[in-house]
Image 1: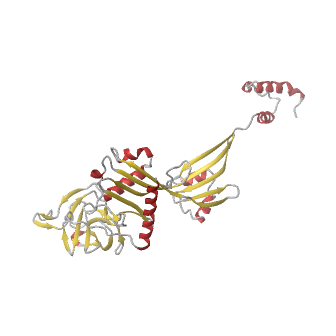
Image 2: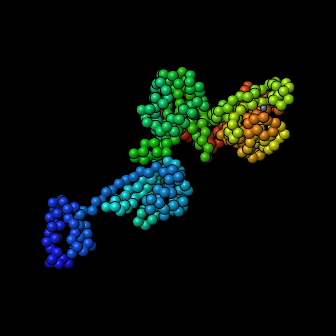
Image 3: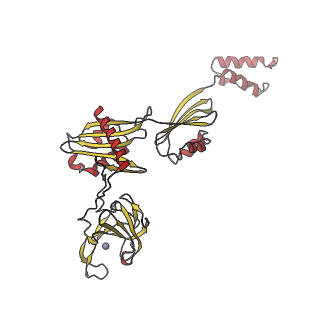
Length: 394
Ligand SMILES: [Zn+2]
């Protein structure tokens, strides 16, 4: 209660507050500090701001974002609900209220690129999972100047255009086929999420309509993503000449040469590709590992059996990265460049064997004969039909 002697001072405070110059007021010692604070609090309106934050998650920031927003409780429940881990690009939308300086999370929603939403009930700490709708979107554009320039007006994410360009280059020579006047057909799928037109976007089809018709379809076999022709044949990079995909230089070709050890004329049964020690060495095509280990002058070597009677050998490896009997493809690293065995410096000795004969790797192509069949072909044809339908709807 306010004592009589304090009244004039209190009047001064009231005047100060109503005229907006409260900072001129200094509390006298006779009034207890606590009482004044209560008085000011009563007159001041609480400042409430509401905000919605869109936080793109990465595997690295997920934990700290959850901790900062008091959502750590959700981790176990999310796992139970099937969200085993946060993937880069998953999106957390948080609505929060800030009252003076206290922030309260009101609502949280997690959208994952694999097509689910998770609604966090903050009050009773439960999570509701729903499947998100995926839709197909199409773009048909007249090629002009460059691929990037042609698709620029659609503001596609860079990953999507890069993938489309890469997929296209598997099927055709883009340098000669991408010319003014050619029509580009582009089909991608995306999760419907307001304000995020490319959330979880995935390339489905890229095609060219001009003098020649080119069609490439992207298709996932489990975790593995591949690119296929319209009839379901897998397209692969022409890696035969380059099991090393980063920088390398040819040291020696196939045929007679001066032996680096004896300096005598001797037949060289493969290609020598110079690259720094540790450079990844890829399998030329899909196949099965039929040998891996140490083998005399070859040093550490991997031998792969491909379709038909083709085999490839990768020698002088520093490390071997595959196991005997392993099924691999052109995306598999079989080992790393080294200098084991009869070798003077780090390089890859690469051999192609046809019908038991070592042949010039630059002259023979190992074509991946990976064609889809059975249930996979049916699923692939389903996607192809959807793409076609989406394109003709426009
Ligand atoms: Zn060699």
